[in-house]
Length: 334
Image (cartoon, rainbow, N blue to C red; front, side, top):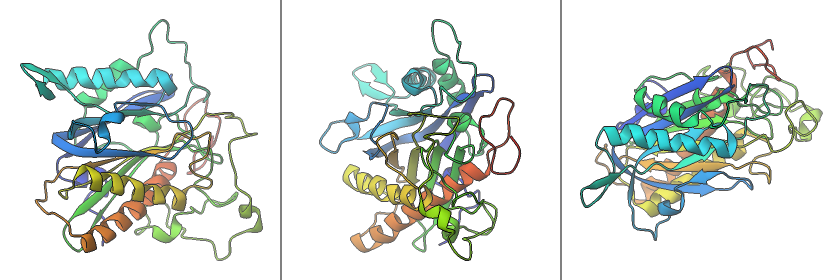
Protein backbone atom coordinates (compact mmCIF):
# COMPACT_ATOMS: atom_id res chain seq x y z
CA UNK A 1 0.00 0.00 0.00
CA UNK A 2 1.12 3.55 -0.73
CA UNK A 3 -0.40 7.04 -0.88
CA UNK A 4 -1.98 8.21 -4.12
CA UNK A 5 -0.42 10.87 -6.32
CA UNK A 6 -1.93 13.79 -4.38
CA UNK A 7 -2.31 12.06 -1.00
CA UNK A 8 -5.82 13.55 -0.98
CA UNK A 9 -9.31 12.10 -1.15
CA UNK A 10 -9.43 13.31 -4.77
CA UNK A 11 -7.05 10.47 -5.68
CA UNK A 12 -10.33 8.52 -5.74
CA UNK A 13 -11.51 8.96 -9.31
CA UNK A 14 -14.90 10.68 -9.46
CA UNK A 15 -14.43 12.82 -6.33
CA UNK A 16 -13.93 16.59 -6.28
CA UNK A 17 -13.63 18.83 -3.20
CA UNK A 18 -14.34 22.52 -2.70
CA UNK A 19 -13.81 24.83 0.28
CA UNK A 20 -15.29 28.17 1.27
CA UNK A 21 -14.22 30.02 4.41
CA UNK A 22 -14.89 33.23 6.29
CA UNK A 23 -11.85 34.22 8.38
CA UNK A 24 -13.79 36.84 10.37
CA UNK A 25 -16.39 34.23 11.21
CA UNK A 26 -13.66 31.60 11.84
CA UNK A 27 -15.81 29.03 10.11
CA UNK A 28 -16.44 27.50 6.73
CA UNK A 29 -17.79 24.71 4.55
CA UNK A 30 -16.26 21.81 2.65
CA UNK A 31 -18.16 20.01 -0.09
CA UNK A 32 -17.33 16.60 -1.57
CA UNK A 33 -18.90 16.44 -5.03
CA UNK A 34 -19.44 13.10 -6.75
CA UNK A 35 -18.94 13.54 -10.49
CA UNK A 36 -21.61 10.86 -10.96
CA UNK A 37 -24.22 9.67 -8.43
CA UNK A 38 -22.42 7.39 -5.98
CA UNK A 39 -23.39 4.77 -3.42
CA UNK A 40 -23.13 6.10 0.12
CA UNK A 41 -23.71 5.23 3.77
CA UNK A 42 -23.05 6.77 7.19
CA UNK A 43 -22.05 5.68 10.67
CA UNK A 44 -22.52 7.96 13.69
CA UNK A 45 -20.67 7.04 16.88
CA UNK A 46 -20.49 10.37 18.71
CA UNK A 47 -23.12 11.32 21.25
CA UNK A 48 -23.93 14.80 19.91
CA UNK A 49 -24.38 14.66 16.12
CA UNK A 50 -25.92 17.28 13.86
CA UNK A 51 -27.01 15.96 10.48
CA UNK A 52 -29.25 16.30 7.42
CA UNK A 53 -30.36 13.59 4.97
CA UNK A 54 -28.67 10.74 6.83
CA UNK A 55 -31.75 8.51 7.23
CA UNK A 56 -31.94 7.92 3.48
CA UNK A 57 -28.44 6.40 3.60
CA UNK A 58 -29.63 3.38 5.56
CA UNK A 59 -29.58 0.20 3.50
CA UNK A 60 -33.34 -0.41 3.80
CA UNK A 61 -34.27 2.97 2.32
CA UNK A 62 -34.99 3.71 -1.33
CA UNK A 63 -32.42 6.20 -2.58
CA UNK A 64 -29.23 4.36 -3.48
CA UNK A 65 -26.87 7.17 -4.52
CA UNK A 66 -25.96 10.72 -3.59
CA UNK A 67 -24.64 13.74 -5.48
CA UNK A 68 -22.48 15.36 -2.78
CA UNK A 69 -21.62 15.43 0.90
CA UNK A 70 -21.44 18.67 2.87
CA UNK A 71 -19.28 19.21 5.98
CA UNK A 72 -19.88 22.52 7.75
CA UNK A 73 -18.97 24.56 10.77
CA UNK A 74 -21.63 26.58 12.57
CA UNK A 75 -23.33 23.89 14.64
CA UNK A 76 -27.01 23.52 13.66
CA UNK A 77 -26.84 26.82 11.76
CA UNK A 78 -24.37 25.15 9.41
CA UNK A 79 -26.97 22.69 8.16
CA UNK A 80 -28.09 25.56 5.88
CA UNK A 81 -24.92 24.91 3.86
CA UNK A 82 -26.54 21.89 2.20
CA UNK A 83 -29.18 24.19 0.67
CA UNK A 84 -26.42 26.14 -1.06
CA UNK A 85 -24.87 22.92 -2.33
CA UNK A 86 -28.26 21.82 -3.64
CA UNK A 87 -28.72 25.13 -5.42
CA UNK A 88 -25.37 24.82 -7.20
CA UNK A 89 -26.01 21.21 -8.20
CA UNK A 90 -29.53 22.01 -9.39
CA UNK A 91 -28.08 24.64 -11.72
CA UNK A 92 -25.92 21.84 -13.13
CA UNK A 93 -28.96 19.62 -13.73
CA UNK A 94 -27.92 17.17 -11.03
CA UNK A 95 -30.22 15.23 -8.73
CA UNK A 96 -32.54 12.30 -8.07
CA UNK A 97 -35.20 12.22 -10.80
CA UNK A 98 -38.83 12.46 -9.68
CA UNK A 99 -40.71 12.79 -12.95
CA UNK A 100 -39.46 16.01 -14.57
CA UNK A 101 -38.00 17.26 -11.26
CA UNK A 102 -34.46 16.62 -10.08
CA UNK A 103 -33.63 16.79 -6.39
CA UNK A 104 -29.89 16.90 -5.54
CA UNK A 105 -29.17 14.47 -2.70
CA UNK A 106 -26.74 16.13 -0.27
CA UNK A 107 -26.24 14.58 3.17
CA UNK A 108 -24.68 17.05 5.59
CA UNK A 109 -22.98 17.01 9.00
CA UNK A 110 -21.88 19.89 11.19
CA UNK A 111 -19.33 20.63 13.89
CA UNK A 112 -19.53 23.15 16.72
CA UNK A 113 -17.20 26.13 16.21
CA UNK A 114 -19.39 28.93 17.57
CA UNK A 115 -17.17 29.61 20.62
CA UNK A 116 -13.80 29.80 18.87
CA UNK A 117 -13.19 33.57 18.94
CA UNK A 118 -14.79 34.37 15.57
CA UNK A 119 -17.41 37.06 15.00
CA UNK A 120 -20.73 35.21 14.87
CA UNK A 121 -22.88 38.36 14.73
CA UNK A 122 -24.14 37.56 11.24
CA UNK A 123 -27.56 39.19 11.49
CA UNK A 124 -30.86 37.48 10.74
CA UNK A 125 -29.62 34.59 8.61
CA UNK A 126 -26.35 32.67 8.96
CA UNK A 127 -23.99 32.73 5.95
CA UNK A 128 -23.66 28.97 5.50
CA UNK A 129 -26.01 28.64 2.52
CA UNK A 130 -23.83 31.02 0.53
CA UNK A 131 -20.67 29.29 1.75
CA UNK A 132 -22.09 25.94 0.63
CA UNK A 133 -22.83 27.34 -2.82
CA UNK A 134 -19.35 28.86 -3.12
CA UNK A 135 -17.64 25.66 -1.96
CA UNK A 136 -19.52 23.63 -4.59
CA UNK A 137 -18.54 26.08 -7.32
CA UNK A 138 -14.90 25.79 -6.22
CA UNK A 139 -14.80 21.98 -6.29
CA UNK A 140 -11.78 20.45 -8.00
CA UNK A 141 -9.05 17.88 -7.53
CA UNK A 142 -6.76 20.24 -5.59
CA UNK A 143 -7.88 21.94 -2.38
CA UNK A 144 -6.45 23.50 0.76
CA UNK A 145 -6.10 21.60 4.03
CA UNK A 146 -5.56 22.80 7.60
CA UNK A 147 -7.27 26.13 8.32
CA UNK A 148 -9.66 25.86 5.40
CA UNK A 149 -13.29 24.98 4.67
CA UNK A 150 -15.05 23.16 7.49
CA UNK A 151 -11.73 23.07 9.38
CA UNK A 152 -11.33 26.87 9.46
CA UNK A 153 -12.39 27.27 13.08
CA UNK A 154 -11.76 23.76 14.34
CA UNK A 155 -9.92 23.04 17.59
CA UNK A 156 -8.71 20.10 19.66
CA UNK A 157 -7.77 19.89 23.33
CA UNK A 158 -4.17 20.92 22.69
CA UNK A 159 -3.83 22.55 19.25
CA UNK A 160 -5.96 24.07 16.54
CA UNK A 161 -7.80 21.48 14.50
CA UNK A 162 -8.28 21.64 10.78
CA UNK A 163 -9.20 19.96 7.54
CA UNK A 164 -7.14 16.87 6.74
CA UNK A 165 -6.96 14.42 3.88
CA UNK A 166 -4.98 11.35 2.84
CA UNK A 167 -5.17 8.46 0.38
CA UNK A 168 -3.99 4.88 -0.02
CA UNK A 169 -3.65 2.74 -3.13
CA UNK A 170 -4.02 -0.97 -2.34
CA UNK A 171 -2.15 -3.76 -4.09
CA UNK A 172 -5.42 -4.62 -5.86
CA UNK A 173 -5.34 -1.19 -7.53
CA UNK A 174 -8.33 0.05 -5.52
CA UNK A 175 -7.91 3.52 -4.00
CA UNK A 176 -9.32 4.72 -0.68
CA UNK A 177 -9.26 8.35 0.43
CA UNK A 178 -10.23 10.21 3.59
CA UNK A 179 -11.31 13.78 4.28
CA UNK A 180 -11.92 14.99 7.83
CA UNK A 181 -12.68 18.18 9.75
CA UNK A 182 -10.93 17.65 13.11
CA UNK A 183 -12.71 19.46 15.95
CA UNK A 184 -12.36 16.87 18.68
CA UNK A 185 -13.06 17.16 22.39
CA UNK A 186 -9.88 15.14 22.83
CA UNK A 187 -6.38 15.45 21.43
CA UNK A 188 -4.62 14.20 18.31
CA UNK A 189 -1.23 14.64 20.01
CA UNK A 190 0.39 12.68 22.82
CA UNK A 191 0.31 14.55 26.12
CA UNK A 192 1.90 18.00 25.80
CA UNK A 193 4.18 16.88 22.95
CA UNK A 194 3.99 17.42 19.19
CA UNK A 195 3.97 13.66 18.56
CA UNK A 196 0.74 12.36 17.03
CA UNK A 197 -1.14 9.32 18.29
CA UNK A 198 -1.23 8.27 14.61
CA UNK A 199 2.55 8.57 14.30
CA UNK A 200 3.08 4.85 13.65
CA UNK A 201 0.90 5.11 10.52
CA UNK A 202 2.63 8.12 8.99
CA UNK A 203 3.71 7.92 5.35
CA UNK A 204 7.02 9.75 4.91
CA UNK A 205 6.82 13.04 6.81
CA UNK A 206 3.24 13.90 5.88
CA UNK A 207 2.54 15.25 9.35
CA UNK A 208 5.95 16.25 10.64
CA UNK A 209 7.93 13.01 10.56
CA UNK A 210 8.23 12.78 14.35
CA UNK A 211 6.85 9.27 14.64
CA UNK A 212 6.02 8.06 18.12
CA UNK A 213 8.10 9.07 21.15
CA UNK A 214 10.62 6.52 22.39
CA UNK A 215 8.44 6.08 25.45
CA UNK A 216 4.94 7.33 26.08
CA UNK A 217 5.20 9.98 28.83
CA UNK A 218 3.30 9.25 32.01
CA UNK A 219 1.29 12.47 31.66
CA UNK A 220 -0.17 11.11 28.41
CA UNK A 221 -1.89 8.34 30.32
CA UNK A 222 -4.58 10.82 31.30
CA UNK A 223 -6.78 11.89 28.40
CA UNK A 224 -6.70 15.57 27.49
CA UNK A 225 -9.99 17.25 26.63
CA UNK A 226 -11.29 20.76 26.00
CA UNK A 227 -13.06 20.76 29.35
CA UNK A 228 -11.30 23.43 31.39
CA UNK A 229 -9.42 25.03 28.47
CA UNK A 230 -10.42 28.26 26.63
CA UNK A 231 -12.71 26.41 24.21
CA UNK A 232 -15.23 24.81 26.56
CA UNK A 233 -18.39 22.76 26.57
CA UNK A 234 -19.77 20.93 23.54
CA UNK A 235 -17.51 22.83 21.11
CA UNK A 236 -16.59 19.63 19.37
CA UNK A 237 -17.22 16.97 16.70
CA UNK A 238 -14.99 15.33 14.11
CA UNK A 239 -16.81 14.76 10.82
CA UNK A 240 -15.37 12.84 7.91
CA UNK A 241 -15.78 11.13 4.56
CA UNK A 242 -14.12 7.88 3.50
CA UNK A 243 -14.26 7.26 -0.25
CA UNK A 244 -13.22 4.49 -2.59
CA UNK A 245 -13.30 3.83 -6.32
CA UNK A 246 -14.37 0.21 -5.71
CA UNK A 247 -17.89 -0.95 -6.56
CA UNK A 248 -19.73 -1.37 -3.24
CA UNK A 249 -23.29 -1.98 -2.14
CA UNK A 250 -24.88 0.30 0.43
CA UNK A 251 -24.32 -2.40 3.04
CA UNK A 252 -20.62 -2.64 2.16
CA UNK A 253 -20.33 1.16 2.24
CA UNK A 254 -21.84 1.09 5.73
CA UNK A 255 -19.21 -1.41 6.84
CA UNK A 256 -16.49 0.80 5.33
CA UNK A 257 -17.77 3.77 7.35
CA UNK A 258 -17.72 1.65 10.51
CA UNK A 259 -14.13 0.60 9.81
CA UNK A 260 -13.05 4.19 9.19
CA UNK A 261 -14.13 5.04 12.74
CA UNK A 262 -11.23 2.86 13.88
CA UNK A 263 -9.06 5.64 12.47
CA UNK A 264 -10.69 8.07 14.91
CA UNK A 265 -9.77 5.76 17.79
CA UNK A 266 -6.16 5.46 16.54
CA UNK A 267 -5.67 9.21 16.04
CA UNK A 268 -7.76 10.89 18.76
CA UNK A 269 -7.94 10.29 22.48
CA UNK A 270 -10.61 10.24 23.68
CA UNK A 271 -12.89 9.81 20.66
CA UNK A 272 -16.64 9.14 20.27
CA UNK A 273 -17.50 10.93 23.52
CA UNK A 274 -20.98 12.13 24.58
CA UNK A 275 -19.87 15.67 23.66
CA UNK A 276 -18.64 14.76 20.15
CA UNK A 277 -20.89 14.15 17.16
CA UNK A 278 -18.29 11.93 15.50
CA UNK A 279 -19.53 10.74 12.12
CA UNK A 280 -18.17 9.13 8.96
CA UNK A 281 -19.84 9.16 5.55
CA UNK A 282 -18.70 6.45 3.13
CA UNK A 283 -18.84 7.03 -0.63
CA UNK A 284 -18.15 4.45 -3.34
CA UNK A 285 -17.78 5.92 -6.83
CA UNK A 286 -17.24 2.55 -8.53
CA UNK A 287 -14.96 4.23 -11.09
CA UNK A 288 -12.29 1.54 -10.85
CA UNK A 289 -14.78 -1.00 -12.20
CA UNK A 290 -13.55 -3.40 -9.51
CA UNK A 291 -15.80 -5.36 -7.19
CA UNK A 292 -14.23 -6.76 -4.04
CA UNK A 293 -14.40 -10.25 -2.62
CA UNK A 294 -14.78 -10.79 1.11
CA UNK A 295 -11.04 -11.45 1.33
CA UNK A 296 -10.29 -8.21 -0.56
CA UNK A 297 -12.75 -6.25 1.58
CA UNK A 298 -10.71 -6.87 4.74
CA UNK A 299 -7.61 -4.91 3.59
CA UNK A 300 -9.91 -2.22 2.17
CA UNK A 301 -11.46 -1.74 5.62
CA UNK A 302 -8.02 -1.75 7.26
CA UNK A 303 -6.85 0.89 4.79
CA UNK A 304 -9.95 2.95 5.57
CA UNK A 305 -8.94 3.05 9.24
CA UNK A 306 -5.27 3.87 8.67
CA UNK A 307 -6.00 6.46 5.97
CA UNK A 308 -8.53 8.18 8.24
CA UNK A 309 -6.03 8.28 11.11
CA UNK A 310 -3.42 9.87 8.84
CA UNK A 311 -5.95 12.43 7.58
CA UNK A 312 -6.78 13.42 11.17
CA UNK A 313 -3.12 14.03 12.02
CA UNK A 314 -2.63 15.97 8.79
CA UNK A 315 -5.59 18.21 9.60
CA UNK A 316 -4.00 19.29 12.90
CA UNK A 317 -0.49 19.44 11.41
CA UNK A 318 -1.58 21.68 8.50
CA UNK A 319 -3.48 24.28 10.57
CA UNK A 320 -2.06 27.81 10.50
CA UNK A 321 -2.20 30.66 13.05
CA UNK A 322 -4.88 33.31 12.58
CA UNK A 323 -5.68 36.50 14.53
CA UNK A 324 -7.90 35.84 17.53
CA UNK A 325 -7.04 32.14 17.87
CA UNK A 326 -7.76 30.63 21.27
CA UNK A 327 -5.29 27.79 20.78
CA UNK A 328 -1.86 27.53 19.09
CA UNK A 329 -1.38 25.89 15.73
CA UNK A 330 0.73 22.73 15.75
CA UNK A 331 3.36 24.46 13.61
CA UNK A 332 3.98 27.16 16.21
CA UNK A 333 2.63 30.43 17.50
CA UNK A 334 -0.83 31.59 18.48
